[in-house]
Length: 356
Ligand code: ATP
Image (cartoon, rainbow, N blue to C red; front, side, top):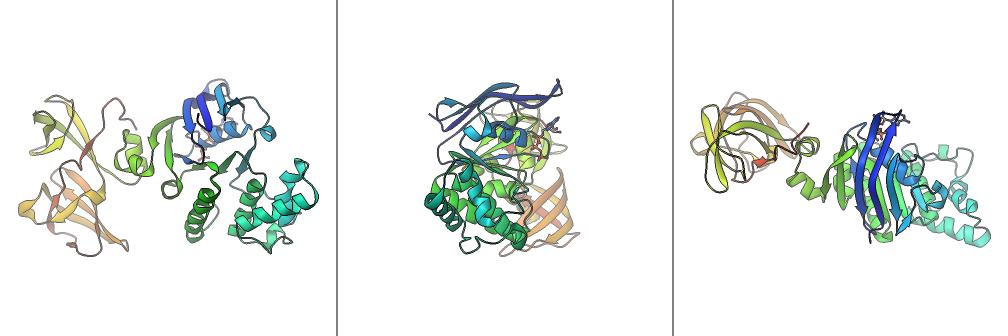
């Protein structure tokens, strides 16, 4: 049995706007799962339904075998960390962390111990008497997490909790929060539109689009082998090559784009069919013109630190290529270069799941 099961979960606002559409999702015990997607795709609405703040229009929410769909939020044993942290400004760190415990009638030494334990988990011991205004952004966020951990929830829900932090602190918090979540084994759902955040922290990512799940899998699966065009474009960068199948045998077809043709792994499509091929910029390599798949002229060359980024006007359209900073050819703008790839690097998305 999964820790948390969502079945056919839907939310319609104003009678006809479907923010979440028949969503099915199982979250396993101890798992860190991210709901990742662009603004407005229904991530927060889904999380709010799980937390109990938004009633679903249809569907069920089952926690450890118990139907929670219409149970009040405070009776769900879930803890939520909001984007704004929602700390009480007139309460000290200790009082903020203890608030949920007092609501649950925990008092005296037990209350003090639980507050101490939660603050130690997020490395804030010693700051018990401070007020939120006397803390840095990262410390405030950790108080918000401690407040949730103190109640020992069955599921921790995180709604973009890192978005107010600067880039460096955010990446430190990714590592810290992930380590804490692993150590405690607490089942966690994170809502984010930040793909790097989802990739660094999650066991699995559900990529959402238009109120549904377009893709579900480990970060590596959804990045390396997405089954939807939406996920290919939303996670990282991709080149899209549009061509036609000009001939084929069992698995391999020859794809032509204008006067150029090259082999690609294409399962079912027949000769004459239009195909879209996707390839990540880091899968393309720059080399000599006489041993390449296609050639092109370098239009843009940017140094991004660890990698070089190129835009190349090639025989099959504009291609974006990234190459490591060390040990690679680094052509100048205007140079004619060859571009190579390995068989299998060009991926085809079946037309029935290819959508924008
Ligand atoms: P963001 O990343 O911007 O927070 P999101 O993916 O979390 O976006 P939701 O907040 O779940 O998206 O909103 C999904 C859709 O539902 C949006 O089009 C939003 O405008 C709409 N919506 C959300 N709450 C309400 C509401 N209370 N009444 C009407 N429409 C709403």
